[in-house]
Length: 287
Image (cartoon, rainbow, N blue to C red; front, side, top):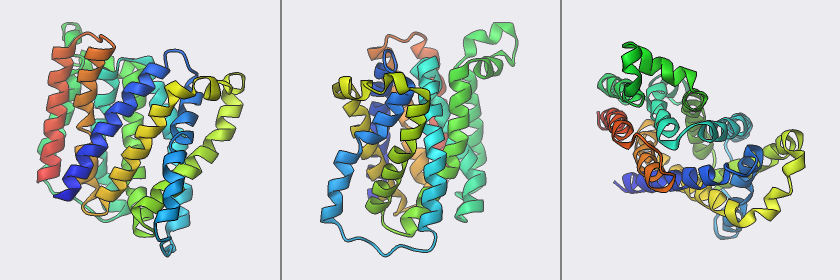
């Protein structure tokens, strides 16, 4: 069960990355935070090249790098926009929909399917998303779902969850055609290069924040690097859906951190919703 430990470490680092991102988004341009997420990961990743054997690259390595890298540039920006516009405890649990989407994308891309008991998990995930906005039920039974769709943060994050269900499978293709660590370094380098023209186009006036706010931004890149390393090591050992499902336990961690650090309100209702969503994640993983 080494993959389970690695997947849980992935979840913890993901949660910490979210917290530091939210903190920085209060006074730093989102495009700069997105660039920092990749830039400050590289000093931790590139030196590793001197200590590993460079793998023989498979035929699908370059296509996976181009497709996965290009998609993740967009996903990174969408992700940060989501947590900028809404509470962490409302937006981040939406990424638990990724395993739901993986039930469709994994069979198509890598030929993996966890099993039909995932339907019970899907029900829990949908019920959990309903509970995130249960206070709005007085406006009608479907009001909690409408609240999610009206709030930009959860709406953006739902798009992130869908796109991650594709890029997670692309990651597996990349790992299978190289090695976990080499893939992490490659995709991170691609993402940083890809973020440069985006940041120069949409945040040229704030590009100096990358240097002036380096101390605050470094933890974002640090935990991004650790998240990627642990995730790629884990998906080499088991199904993508299993790893991503466990990774989504970061949702509950973030709900608690959001209440403790950012004093976000509605913890009991949102925590219950997050727990329901995580129950769905566990059902998908275990069965």
